[in-house]
Amino acid sequence: MFYRAIRRAFLILAHPFLRFRVENVDRIPRTGPVVIVATHRSWLDAPCVGGACPRPVRFLIRDRVFHQNRLASWFYQRMGSVPVSPGGVKSIGAIRAALSCLRGGGVIGVFPEGRVVREGEREELRAGAALLAVRTGAPVVPIVIHGSAAAWPPGRRYPGPGRVRVEVGHPLPAPEGSREDAEQRLMDRIEAALPRDDTVNP
Image (cartoon, rainbow, N blue to C red; front, side, top):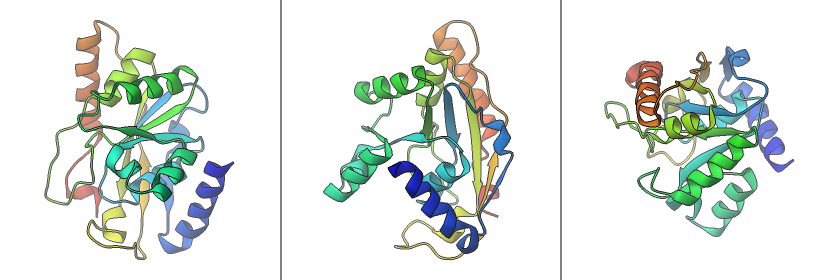
């Protein structure tokens, strides 16, 4: 109920303030495990993904963000977020929690760049999303968020008005074959599905 209340509040504000809209939401499976991967240019990105997805999303977030203060820890716990230590897949507890969520038919949200990336920068994608998908058979749904960095750029304390569009891509099924090979092939598909240049912030 807490998650749904926060999501509803975001959507109430986002539609007039950000002219928020979602394209191809029907590409997100309505049942079964799903791994969502998204571009990350702004602190707005997590609420935008959560607002776009009709199902609750448990996000993997950096532990320093999760534990930055008591209020943050309380909020992220109530939202079902999973703290991840630097290195992503090295956080065994986080991987176990995410696998458990997926095996129970839930949705995990991952920003494979690992952090908010400023325009002009480029960050190598982490392999955690592919690992989770291959081990559980969950499809990966890529999401590109347009305009979030313009509405709330890194370094600014609060968001401003803008125009944010969430574009949902086609699900990427987990490949068959050996685990290592399947994870690499899926990472290649994720890389191709997530444009990581200035086109995500028109």
